[in-house]
Structures are given as structure tokens and as C-alpha cells.
Length: 417
Ligand code: 4AZ
Image 1 (cartoon, rainbow, N blue to C red):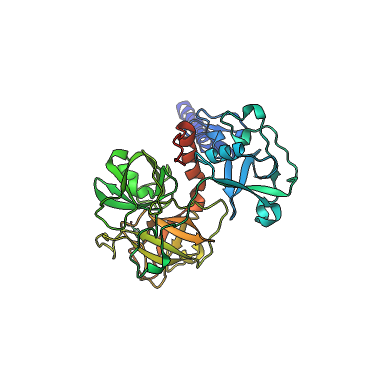
Image 2 (cartoon, rainbow, N blue to C red):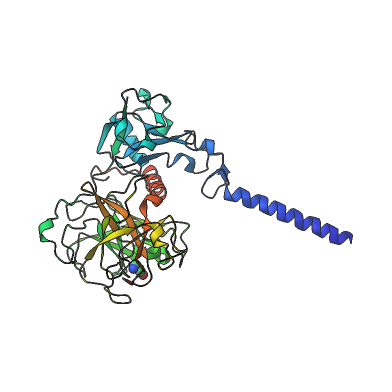
């Protein structure tokens, strides 16, 4: 009997201790430092590295809303940065924290012209002049004031010239054969000389694709990135080697969520009109249901078919997650991290080999990456539209990877941004 009681107590202790550890690992209500434990949320973005690898001082800056309003995270609150005292040193620091090595322009916009939810928490940032030569992090700058913006203006920031098609002549497009310069951000990812997947150029060093494309082959030497091409097999186009492949750590093979990966190129791309980056959307940006966007790639022209030698493209409407979760469509499969696009009547869709490629939408003449081709039941079937990884839901992850690399290996080449 005593042994039995002893055993019960021991088992209870193990269970309680085990659960305790489990709660600790899940970091409920706390900030998770990669694999090295949890810290108080209040220590995030406080200017000191509290995690072993400084993860708590990453992702402290973001661009929000339609006009790219700069926001910083302080004391657990995202605040919109006022335009007063703003200067180019601060702009460059902010762009570095967003994972770029340059900045293009900063503007002061009237507070009243931005989205309502960006107007409420404001902060002014000014630089200690002594630190201007060092690598400053804007959320660390000491002179915060929680005032209203004294000039009534906020800072908007552009870190990359993206989303334009300088060499595309709209008059010559016909059918759904793509023409040079029409989708200059589209790349072809070759695994040992065979086209496997599409991808999108998001900066001179980064290609965004799907995790399911690279998960089993996450070795840079296996891959070549081809840019600025329409026809396969490839001819005189730029080809690039890969330095690093990062896929979302929550992606699981055969799973559908977190289907996103980044490839860092060994050398920067040269942009020339036929090769251009597409813009990432900003935080909180929404793309209306029914908005017409474009998919493109060298994927199969029917389910189970061979890839196309020419880059094809199609105009498809965005579908709300509600409509896409309808019992006749994909009930129970659509998460907030996905966005559907296509026609419920079928007929036009992405297919095998298009994966990782862009779902691109034009917004006031700027092209933005709204999705990355991810999955679907078959291709172009009735009630089975294409499903794409929703980029606005992946921004924190994307920025974190880019910022980490920019902080560890800053790009020094002047053309590299
Ligand atoms: C695929 O297997 C795939 N119809 C990509 C897109 C779609 C279906 C399958 C969407 O890579």
C-alpha cells in the first residue's frame, strides 16, 4: 500500500512538474526567445538584449497602412512616429531594422490623412547627436515624448523602389502568355537544373517562395534562381546562386499553414526593368474581396500535366476567407494565414509548378505581393480555387529574417538594397 501511495505521489509530481515545464515552454503571456526560454513582455524592444541572441530587440519597427506609416513598439504598444525632428540618419536606421541596407525617401504626412487606427498612439523620436555615427536602433533612442505630433504630421518611409514595371508596354499584352517586363519580380527556382517552383523578388538579396518547395531540399547548393525570363529552358538570363534558405519553422510537410520560405542570394540582383522587386504590403493593409489580381508562372496547364515552357499569367479575383470556407469550397481548411483567389466556377487557376510564385495586386500603380502560391484541390476545378499564403499575415516573420541577416551581415555594396 505504501509503495502504491508513494508511486502515486511520484507520478503526480512528475505530471505537475511536466505541465509546469510545458507552460514555461509555451511562453504563455510572455515573449519567447527563440529556443532559449521566455522573458517578460515588458523587456521586448526596451533597448537591451534580454534574450541570449537578442531576439527581443528585433521586429520593433514596422510600416503600416496604405501609406507606409512608420511605427515603433515601445512598452508593448505600437506607436506612430511623428515627423518632428525626423532626419535621414533615423530613416536609414529604420530601414535597416526593416531588413534593408538603404532608404529611398521619408515623407511627412498630415495625421488626418492616415487610417484612424494609426492616429491614436503617437511618439516623437529624436537622435542623441553623439550616437549618430553608430548603428542606432530607432526604438532605443532615448528622447521619446508621448506628446501629440507637434507639427500634426507623421513619418512615412520607403526603403526600396519596388512594384513598378518600367519596361512593360501594356498595349502588347494578349491572351495569357506573359511578355517581358510584365512580371519582372517573377523568378524560376531550379532544383538541379529542373524548374521546381516560382518565387518573387522582394529585394536585391531576397526571394520569397513557398516552404513546401524547399522543405525537403533546404540546401543552397542544390538551387539556382533564374530571373528576367519568359521562356524555359533558360538562355542568357541572369542566374544566381543561393546563400541561405529559411523556411517557416511552423511549416510541416503535408501541412497547409505557414507555407512560406525565403532564399537569400549569394550576390545582389541587378534591377533593369526586366528584373525588379515587388513591394511587400504593409501591416494592416487589406485587399478587398473581388479585387482583380494576377498569378503567373511556368506551372502545369492542367492538373497532373507538364509545366509550361512559357510563363503564363491569369487575372483572378480575391475571394474572402468566409466564402472560401464555405462547405462546398474548403470548409475547415482555410486559416487566417491564407488567402484564396480564382473563380468558383473553375477554369482559371494556378497549378503544380506555380507554387511559391506571386499573387500580385496593383494598388495606385504600385504592385504588391498579396500571396504566394500554396495549394488547392486539383487545378481550376469548380469550387476549388487556388489558395495562397497571405503575405500580410507573414510580415513579422519575413521582416525578422531580413532584419536578422542585415544586422549580422550588413550589405556594403552601394547598389545593394
Ligand atoms: C501544387 O501542387 C499546386 N490550384 C499549386 C497550386 C494549386 C494546386 C496545386 C492551386 O503545387
